[in-house]
Length: 301
Image (tube, rainbow, N blue to C red):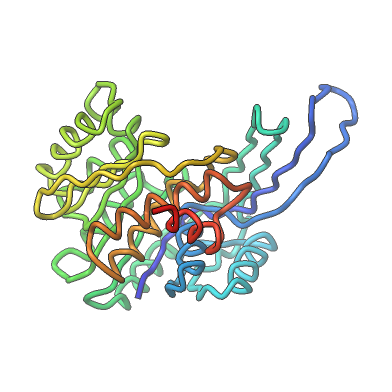
């Protein structure tokens, strides 16, 4: 089983508003609602790839109920912990076509220690051979070493941990030998105070993350494709698929989902290709990619 953990899920309210006149009434051209959070995005793409997963995390209030119901209706199992006060955040994204986007992101509810303890109790249900995905930022009410504590709690068991994070949040979990980490080239460069703009340089610095403990390192590079250093230190490179970029939100999460699904179904070469296709398909669509969009890219050759 695959488990995805989203500590601070959200309702994303995306509105196309054209130009905004401050201090006046503005009419929207269009709007839509989706259920967001990096781990939830991974589960949604896995579902498109016909891979089951269980979405975990914290929810609160009427917005939390809407998140849980919304993703359950998409066929995803849920195991959220309900908080007794507050409400799950609403993120407002104001778009002026596809040229600019302004985000107003909520903070989310306070998470008390007894609910954190409950989360760790539920982690004990994860079996050897399962996969857990830790993705996204840490809510302000939790300690910034929560990912470390989770991996320490699971340490010594045969559980594949996938971590999609950046900065110290990523570096500090490497000692627990996560199965996969997925920085993009900008995030990887910032870790080592350098600019990464070629596959060769991505491979060089990805290897440094392996030396610190990561089993596999996947680096997404947008239009320049992606690079994987696998557990045998092989360097695998995938070219980017062709298309017009419309949306980058969720592209990295889609790549993670594609890689996990590809690994479940085949070897690392297929995992890299499927991950790159999923990331590309989402970036070429208005929202998260559909199976048809992913299959269309895979059919390119």
